[in-house]
Image 1: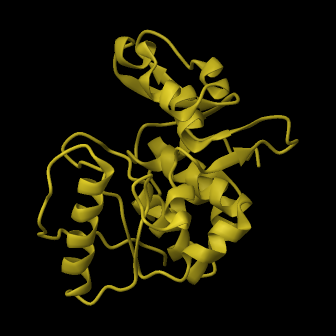
Image 2: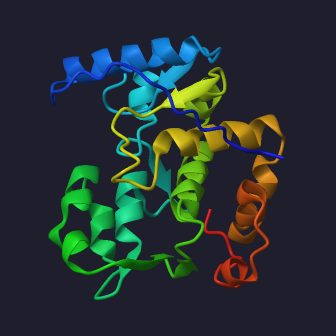
Length: 218
């Protein structure tokens, strides 16, 4: 069965917002991880020194609807699909850049996220990374060159991810894609959101499954 192994790694952190500082931290992280036997490693963020790592960032990875009528980034799709206690989904964010969608004031002022609604298809908030992983993996399948390049790596990192502040991690989603490919279960997992939930998380939770509509947009 597919699965992702998460490693906690001690490395030297170089403080500062400059890209040069981030890249020093990335090199330190990768050096420590390689010492554990994981190599090669791809940084998946705008700070990656490899072009493929930058393009695989959720801010840059693009996704199209089945009829190719709409095209937007994974990040914009994720933000535009959030349903809050006091509003949403704010579908106009599909037409915004990734950074504009993430920083939209409504995202911060509408209360807690209670679910996701993507073109009328509803997703629960548990498992916590379910919707984000689903949309990222779908997007990557559409981008065949990037998908092909990603399978040559043994591990992935995201220097921007802070587990104390964030839930979703693009490096995790990419690792999940590679796991689904390596086990030959990608097509089955993406055949319906229901199957993705069962295969990616080995979940048969009736509460979660009942909340998933089984018609796939892509």
